[in-house]
Amino acid sequence: MLFETLKQSCHREWDVFVKHPFVEQLAQGSLPESAFRHFLMQDYIFLLHYSRAHALAVVKSEKVDDLRESAFMVDLLLNHEIGLHVDFCARWGISEQDLQATEEDPANRLYTRYVLDKGHQGDLLDLLVALAPCALGYAEIGKRLLMDDKTRLEGNPYREWIELYGGDEFQEGAQKAAGQLDRVARRRGLSQEDIAHSARWPSLSDNFRTAVKLETGFWEMGLNPPHS
Image (tube, rainbow, N blue to C red; front, side):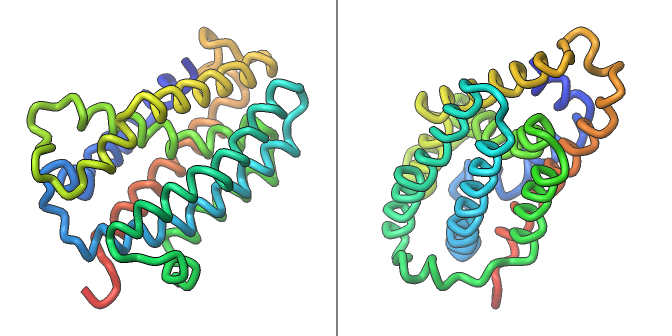
């Protein structure tokens, strides 16, 4: 899979992202509530921009299956996932009005605008590569935490978050995203066997590495809430 090849190209950065202290504290239930609340509120803003990025993927799609898959993601995000996020935040005493009034953190703005910029400048493959660390990274984190005997589920205030991203529905969605990434690459003549030797590889791997670093920056943002 192209995703695995991209991961291998920046394995150090990837490990820092998926094993970040924010993630490890979340797994043990020791993450400060203020950090998680700040993360949740910023994640709402992120999801709005993530929806815009998938809407851009509709524009960039050349084949009917990509059009349908990208359009499905826009509908899923705007009409379902964001609603679930609002409900989840409500359990932490965060209203939808609070979410809508959230001031966007610079780390959030830097990441989301990077993804949109790559989509505007490049083609569908460039956009999907920039999007990949989010969905596929969260799926890897959720699955690992859910299966790890060291993860504290009983009495963990963040158990629902772990079960959401480690659950079957999110895992299946991530697999579809990985499949689309492979399909779009093949249509551009980039097979799994030779992609690392193609003329596009330097820009694709740099794109992915940058997005991974920006994901790590999002965790750092979560660990440093305002007025903490």
